[in-house]
Image (cartoon, rainbow, N blue to C red; front, side, top):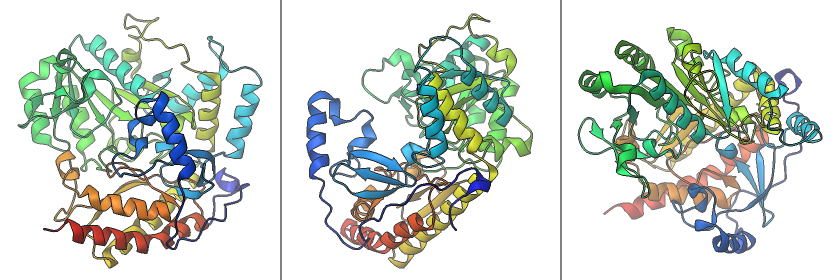
Length: 466
């Protein structure tokens, strides 16, 4: 398949490392273990975001010292093909030379001003040009974006109730860290200690892709609902795409009841297409969300996110309107420079390359697991995909289906791939990500590792049987 070259806006000026062979090897993690021990002394759990601790898969998390193109290198000197891409942002690959150059130039002019700057306006213009939003407000994280969008929706409608879906993650916002109880539609209960019951009492949780549940809750509570928030295409319970027309149905239902439709594209935005998930459904079906949230790719690997929407809704934000929101580092000139450069380089050729790479790899994964007799299901949304080790499941449409998989089989598969120089998401409930830097060499390295990993998964399946 090759590498996207000058016509795609991503010149290949890096050299892929010469990794250890993908046969069975013993990879020392001594240095990572030492750093993990040091981290435990000063950081809860030894990590700054829980999934990095490898609790879901066991073993020692790898501490990375560098990333280049499609590859990561750890403190023990081992190279890995990276299939998380910093959980999505690295659409162009690590250390892209043009992004690096733009950032280095920006740093020479200072790292933060606390004033408006040109790059934040240019990044906002780029986001507005690609999406159906009229205006955006820049923030520093996806959590901050969704938190602010919820506040704005409540301020605009004068209502309090928020509807969300089980299995959709919108950051660690108190009112959205909720899990479903029993029944078709329930009041939420806090999904973590430290969240007061009062923080989630106005949150209703529904099964994803369930139109009947949505219709019922709006029929019963429609006049109280400020907004419905959903991942435009969920990737936090594994990849569980919306059923055809589901997002349009949500937009139309909200409109009928005077609620706002909030589409969370922190993960899918500018990754599954140049217009995000909306480019795959709303742009063709003729609807648009009232509010959208963005992150990851739009920051180019730096802490940057945004929320945006209709001009009349966004006009409620301070200083234009009464809904307050602020941030010291919002619109940071280094982050906005990295994001703007990334989006400008994210051409149609880049998306075509990433889509083709994802198709090649996901097909190879499925074929390897088939040959090994491992029950599984591969699901896609654009270039995002994940593997569910779920016997007797033809399609995963919601969190209950995602939760039916055998995570012990994924654990065996994960470590077999890690030992052969492939870094997968250390959780069965995450999307795999590729970049424009995943060339034939990187993909072949992953494909060569698959037979042994599939066999390890098959052995885990045998061990799990009664």
